[in-house]
Length: 153
Image 1 (cartoon, helix red, strand yellow):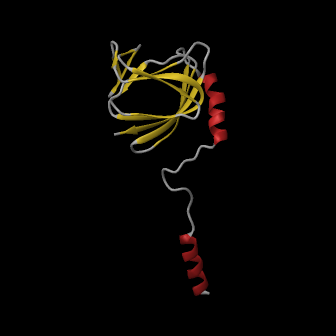
Image 2 (cartoon, one colour):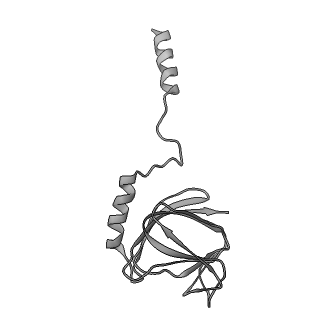
Image 3 (cartoon, helix red, strand yellow):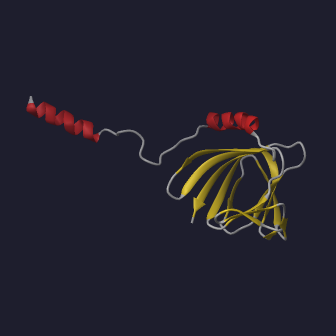
């Protein structure tokens, strides 16, 4: 009997105890649901975001825009965008015009001067290094939803 109990104990220890710390999965259906729910949460700038989770040096969120955003500058964080739906113009590089500090290591401005522009659309993935000014601009009437990974460097 003792041998059977010992075997069962070792078998139980060998079984996975659930997902490891830091493991997450968001299905395509989950992301589509965020795209539908976020417009209901929009602020006066016609933007809505939802943080999904955060770990030691990275976090995940979903963002939805129905208007252009401000220019942003993250001194210590890189952004990775995975575009879910819509299209926008990404302005990157250059300098924020009349920047203001909004949080430690974070600045915002109404626009960027001297940046480059690229059209981005559903299916595109963009990496924006820390210390790179960037802004998402939308044409009137357009909608844009994207998954964001923020990596603190």
